[in-house]
Image 1 (tube, rainbow, N blue to C red):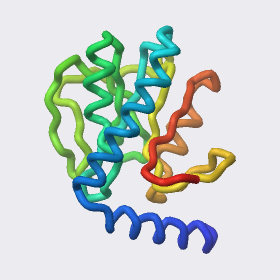
Image 2 (cartoon, rainbow, N blue to C red):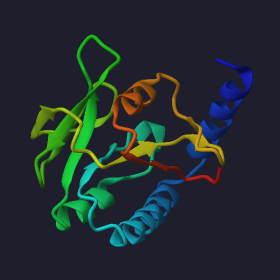
Image 3 (cartoon, rainbow, N blue to C red):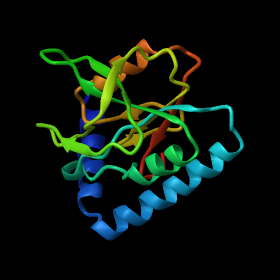
Image 4 (cartoon, rainbow, N blue to C red):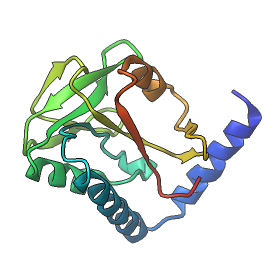
Length: 165
């Protein structure tokens, strides 16, 4: 990995670490409102892949977005790492499911079915940082890079970040 990317990852991790819980929640709600406005003009989109926030990584809280999407009858998906691999499996989650925290601190739905990803129309992606061209910096493991490359090119990819490009 190049040095600039490592430095950017370190810088944005520090910026997120400096955010208060109230700031994270407030910015998460602003992001949710922006997504809701965007989706109100795109009612044909109904199959959404969401990430759920790892608390210790101070990620965007997507649970309010989950609640909105469920209220409009959308089908929701998330992912988990398949055992003994670096591959993300697609999980279709049941409405109103509760969540368990896995060994990495990721909320995983209690009630889900492992499915193929063909029905997904939109993927929400956690972003640590990104640039004007849409290049992203995550936490460096590459799970989302592999997952995104496996999806149809028609899938809309929307990154969620607290920071400007």
